[in-house]
Image (cartoon, rainbow, N blue to C red; front, side, top):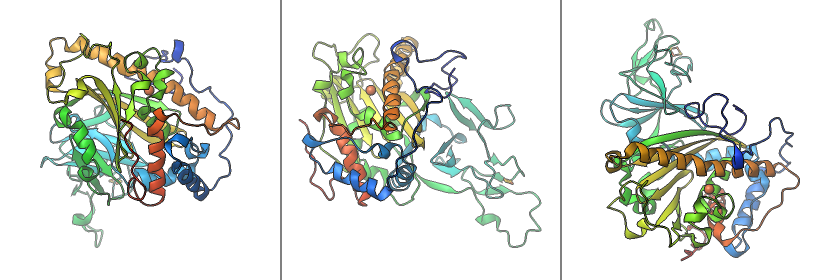
Length: 446
Ligand code: FES
Ligand SMILES: [Fe+2]
């Protein structure tokens, strides 16, 4: 298997088997020459992004390629966009019991998401306060000598306390120090003040969010409209039943843009989504400060449900039985909904041209109790993979284009309003504000 190209986690793909075959056979060529970033300052780039975002939708165009290739740009985003906002890391169903935890790294922080003995979900650093050891480095516990294990492509486990393998300091599930051998001669050492660092964490609709800057307005305050959109799914009671990890050779914004715009149903999904949700009928709702919603109505001739679907969720508004919808909770919380399910995408940057994506499917208890659950789940899982392969292909090829002198800034269709709204979000962040706060609100397309 070509590990330099986009690929599944090892749980999904057997050795020697590539997911890129047939139409989706295009990945990034190996060892291709790639030009370094062109010499554009961050200030000039942010200024150009603001200028671009201020065009009306009818005159909208793409950003300079450096917005997707520059390390300075990514560093700026980590501080002002991703780190300043809420990043969704997990769903409560993945750590249902006290002592359950997930290990993951994001934006350079090795983290534990843990369900405490008091029922609280916390996000702790895995960096030991003694000598900086990662207390559960990747792979830790695979030999049965630690609490961490690998399930569904994710490092997770169950424990009563955390033990640093280096010098055996131990920590309670809330991060406080429990034991530290042979430290009685360390003068002035204060056990009570020594703990794993704790990050700001909020659970919203079952999703566990991290705010690195520590000063963002609450998730509920930012995602009020999004919460209204998603209310019918009762996501807090859903369970993550499928999770796929994808190593991506493209900038994190390439995925966010691709996820939100449905113009590409015409090309990339011409044999799949275009047949059920034609690009022409999709439309974007009024601009918001912290989220975005795009509606993808079913083609009229398409029945609202098939034998492979789970029972429609009875608490949904009527409109949701005849469409899917995609949502972005800025900066990176991506979901899309169908009448019986909810998909969640978690994208995190690794470098300007590399990202890690985790695609998840959530179902409710009615679906889990369906007598045909295994067969229907297999169909849902295949669908999640098949149309995402189509997206992987185009996103990978787009990133290559950013490095070429042949790159030209293109004009956008009105169906790409989500891309324009994302530009307006970035521009607002560059001005230290949010969309709709210092510019007129862009109206709904319907
Ligand atoms: S580094 Fe953790 S106990 Fe020493
Ligand atoms: Fe797509």
